Image (cartoon, rainbow, N blue to C red; front, top):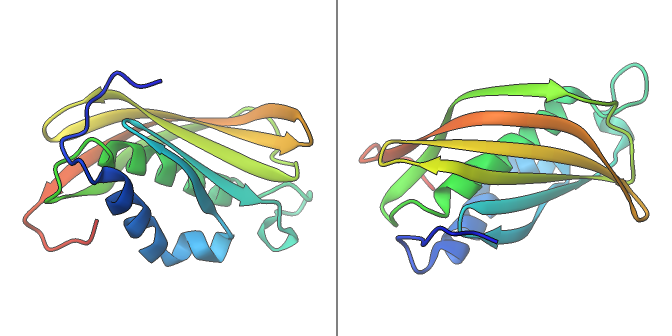
Length: 150
């Protein structure tokens, strides 16, 4: 799938370890399902507690999982001494977020030394049906020497 070669041969363990420390993702019930060079997938089950007034998942919750998918996709390509930080993103909500679960897929579009541009999509999944409900364009920063965790 990816044409990128990670700088860190242990990128999968580093990305998964960082995700496990992200307590907000735990609060959302999100789990990381795929990690490849320049690509990450995160799933979140539908939860009534995360809905807005019309019964759809709140856009903030949905945007959070695709932001993390994009950030971790970028982290897969960073050196082992770097951490990732979102510096900008734009989302388009394409359809109401309702389904059994949401699947966020983040991809690196352009990997730079300091900034990485990523794209992401969120799919509402019910059974075998997938519907694209959100798309994101994001810029991630390669952070070095600031004492941040991955």
